[in-house]
Length: 229
Image (cartoon, rainbow, N blue to C red; front, side, top):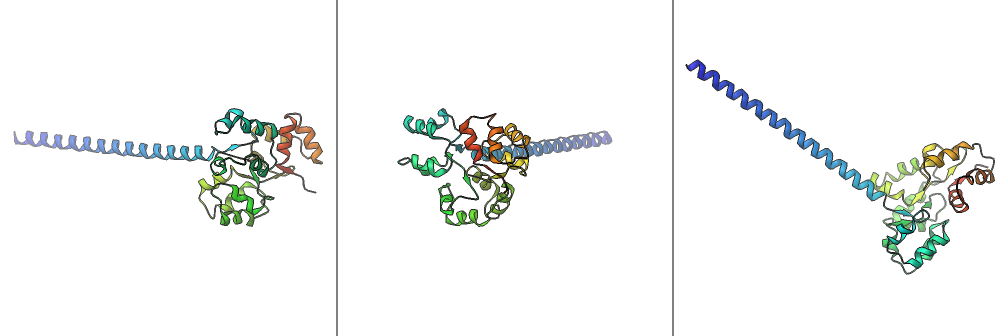
């Protein structure tokens, strides 16, 4: 009888131990899943935050009105664009709360030609960072910008800056990734840029790319490219 009692006690102990281990494993899985979900949500939030700056040359009328701009200002923006520089838009917005507005809308700066002082129009960019933007010129690619400016700020901040700046590309040698990094240039237009290489001159670029976009968009795109002499 004692042997049977002992056997039953051992069985109960093993069963309890197994149940405890199982529960522990399930708790670990739940914790792991929660951590992964949280990390994914945080990354999504960062990405969403980075992508909230509208390009004033591409924003729709509805987008612009959503910023709280008057119908009059929205009409002027639509009529006068493409803006070939941020200063043109800035002059139009006299009287507006620019500090708040530029967190939501901007015309990207050419990293290689913009005056150092003008970089300070970018929200969160002061004297020191404006100097660093200028320090590493000429930029030959967005990767170079990320690498150099990444010495001073974290990755999410570098990504935020990319809403406000661009690196012009050499039409005949730029990589696909560098072309796609240009404001408002997607996969299809990148293919068209590459399709007509080599370009003999910018007149050829205007002729070929003008088959796909109107004059205003062509004028905007031309700002992003150059040809080596």
